[in-house]
Length: 332
Image 1: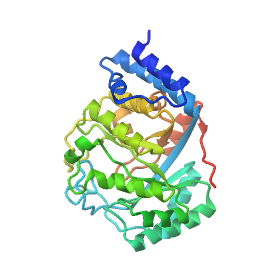
Image 2: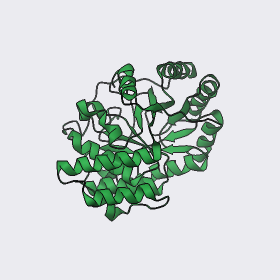
Image 3: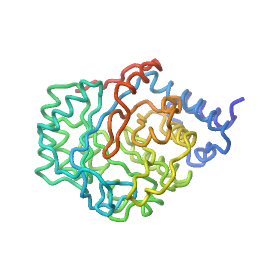
Image 4: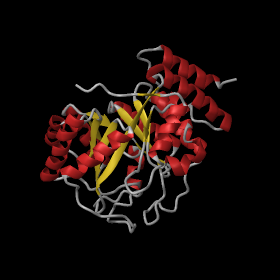
């Protein structure tokens, strides 16, 4: 028999247009036993089916500017504060950005994000991204996204005018845990960037990384902040401990705990897109297909920033085998 608290909470979410789970109710769902995790996944899947049906979206990214980042994020191989073996290069030119986008479009991606290392791009670099977006907007029906660090509203408006539809900027973790992860900028600056992007008419995509030493209370705290920010899409990552970073020695999360994190976020964000990104291969192992039963409705496919992902055809086959259809945005 399903856990009554989990089942009753899911019923309230799926039968109401405006009921929102509270912090206390969210914490009451935190599983203590494996069977409670299974109950949580089962009900999260019902919530996903209610609001997202059987449609899945697929996003792909490129690491368009790599390394030499002045930020000291504890998980990141691109930080100058860490000693990691990665490629270092400046921002690609617009032709390279366009070619990468066209390759991903051919592979079946419907969200393409240009991602850059560093605190923020300068004006010339923003212009390069804009030129690429203008061309891609004409040549593909992909939704164009960007993840370029901290952002002003003026820069956000330029990106929006060029055809970028969504801005990605992770808050990474809860406010109460942030100083354990990053000390070179303030948590409030990340929220300011999201607000600037939203004010410019961009959709906002923001989430974080689980498995960085945060508590369940802090996971709920992060979810509540994202709800306050009214984000459109929530990317969920799992720590992939990279040698040379401050978190390089941490163990990966247990797979079932990782799935429970996804499910809890679906309870808190029933109508939002939840996409599973970096770290899923090393964390979930053979349970990667379970992310959809845990409530996710999107998947990042292809490679990540400094680590390899699974083969795109393998992920596409997994999605097709599960009977999910392709969710494509209708662009204006």
